[in-house]
Amino acid sequence: MKHASASTRIAIVFSVMLFCNSVTAIAQSSNTGTTGKVLKLLSEHNGPVINNDHPDVITSNNKSGFETGQVIKFGNLYHMFVNEMFDRPHRDLRIAYWTSTDAVNWKRQSTIVNSIPGRTPTNPRSEVWVNAVVFNEEESAWNIFYTAYRAGDSTKGEVHGNDYAGRIWRAMSVIKGRDGIAGPYADMAIVLQPDQHSQAWEGQQAVASFFPYKAGNTWYTMYAGHNHLPKGGWPVGMAFADKFNGPYTRMPEEFNPLNVTDTFMENPIVSRIKDGRYMMVFDSFGDQEIGYSLSADGVHWDEEIRVKIQAKQNIWAEAGDHFTRTPLCAIEEDDGTFTVVYTAMRLVQGRRFYAVGKCSLTWQ
Image (cartoon, rainbow, N blue to C red; front, side, top):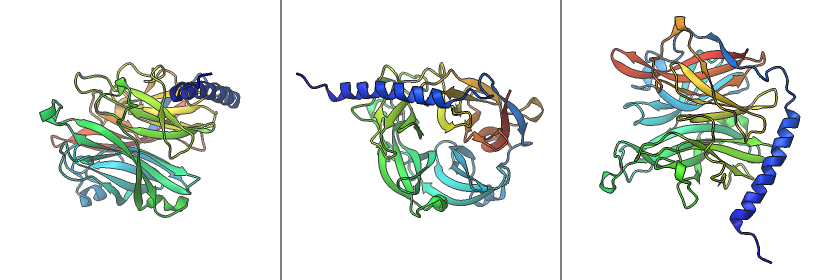
């Protein structure tokens, strides 16, 4: 009798796991009031909550603003881990930590991770993009996941100005317990990177983002890719692991990438909401819009829905598919509304600055 190959065993286990998780999640999802409703803008802050004239932006010499990251609510504080584009937009980066009691008035606390200056094909950390902040109960420690890229090598036919060979780093808080969220953080390992298991859709930029979350007894992660030559879309796929720290196995190519959007989704953030479903928010197309998708089991995702996050009377972000950038959270508050903190581009004296905005969404 022949023994099944490793890939076959993974496929069998994966199929059973999907079925069990789906049944469990559907049983737990009680179809309470929000099913069938969509998210709509409820209220918003008048203009950015962090702009180019914020005292901590000036003190930290942040010239171009913010992009990607995550805001979590722990205790009485909102904690924001976000990329600061301290010089050139999307090129010169560091990961910073900010806090707020109301998601409006923010105070910069520290720099968590610095990039290594000098964007070259041989520098694998010329950019650092924070993706997720998760507390791991087994380690009793906070973990940050971030992407580090190298530049393209024009001598090998690559595009010099583009990002290549993204590697996902895991950094863990040195101070144990939930109170260690402020850091410092120490690099632990690379948890996902281009290798022999990479899939064709991932392209030359992958691995481009990483967001782990638990559904049932399994850890899943969203991860992204993009092909520069020929230029492709921005697909997102999934991987899974038995343990938080991995190793993570890519879903089969019959499953990846997700069929959530036609062309573009970036930097997805997943949370379990009160009605039992999973919600994913992400950067999408549309003027002053973000996208979201819902799932009963955390594995199978609905087609995206876009929601306006700036009302006509309070538009401060420039129009354009890539100018309202990335939602950093969709935190479900005690009253059932969702606090969304996000980045968006505005022109300040002819120069682009990616500011931070805040709004509240509700089911309608």
